[in-house]
Length: 104
Image (cartoon, rainbow, N blue to C red; front, side):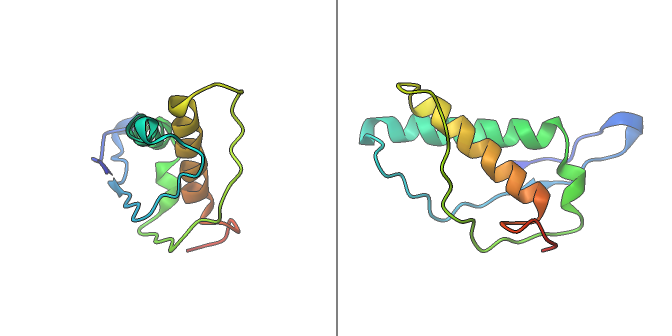
């Protein structure tokens, strides 16, 4: 998934961001809901990074892994809400520099 560099406020170009998720563990998600979850995750991640904060990523960043996270969504919210929550979690971790919030 990529987000092409766009012109932001003041004419500055936001950095191009490429996110590769090699493995996504989905326990407790019905097989029929996985595609919807992944689509919502991608949309949420793109939206959150495009909305601001991608400048904080710097010249380059690579995270080998993020720790498992407990994502809170309302009961019966469905795969779309869970995917969007996962996208927000990943975007926050990228901006913070990884699981500990340090530099890459």
